[in-house]
Length: 140
Image 1 (tube, one colour):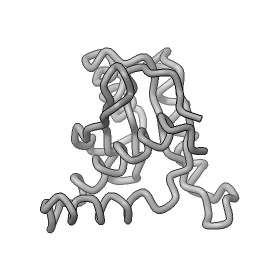
Image 2: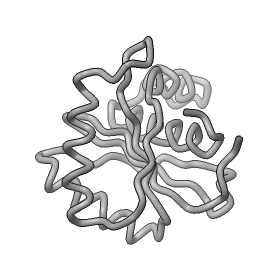
Image 3: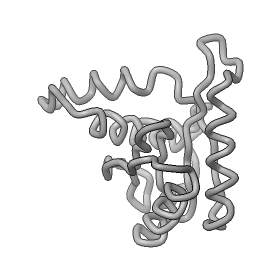
Image 4: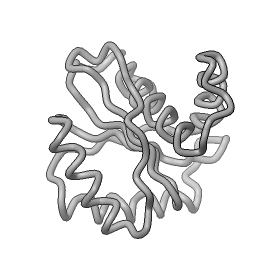
């Protein structure tokens, strides 16, 4: 079931880059914003919090890297560690969504849009938009 419309920030957490995207107030369209280089979780959290303020979002949607069978893998710990840092600088609600296959979906979408070859940052940002769309559509 689709979620109530609101402007949100989508986050595709990575150990090198963090893709970010946003949606309109009605939750109709999503758009990649780019990526945040991840020097440390603390620095990245400050940048993400500032981006959330600048974009005037009501919440954050972040992808969880689950195994193919749906179980939480070891990489989920990295995302949760990042969320602890984000909570220190941002009081917005955070929603988690399954990120399985979002990068390959992002690559396919960029190819279909004629934006291939793409940089890793473009793929990460598109992946963040896909994660956001999944959450808006009520996909878990």
